[in-house]
Image (spheres, rainbow, N blue to C red):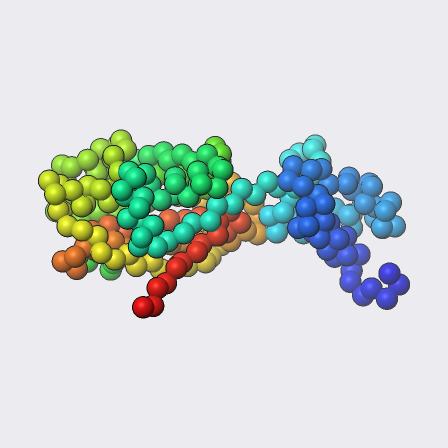
Length: 256
């Protein structure tokens, strides 16, 4: 391509990227070696390595010391958020995450990492209607797709409602916390009537990169979700952090 004004490393990266995105290079497939790329494109090994580095930064390929770069597998789940969807999952006694993942042929898992009483973070206090630094119960979990960590989820709950309940125990709650909230014999005894979600896109913090195995260059979505009951009180705030290369968010907004 005599009139191609792209730098050689960019042209190599563009062609390899195209092969990955079209499926010609499938997940797990090895990229041509730097020596092979050098010969194919009539360039230097340094230029070939720079092209591969571009794809690593985009999260398309992974490599380790002494091993060839490979196309990174990217298990992706679509999460559908609607009121009827929530009610249907509640009736089935399964979480929306588990149900959506299983419906897409993947294996879900949720692990409780820690349950503790902590000072309420400012952005959560504002939503939960408590004072900044006031004690709240935090349930910290990791969600997995086919054994790979895919979400970090921290749930925050008012102490005055949930102290001494199953929310404070390091074990799963049948039907989830929402079932406990709506239980006629539970601590709240109210129906959840509204969820409000705030979505933020940013680069991950080092601790998030390590916990979720996020490749260089892949942003993170942070979702803060409030659950409001019929009386108007927010009884739960979920702080979810998800790598943007593994999720598709779909919101259905009815406007009758």
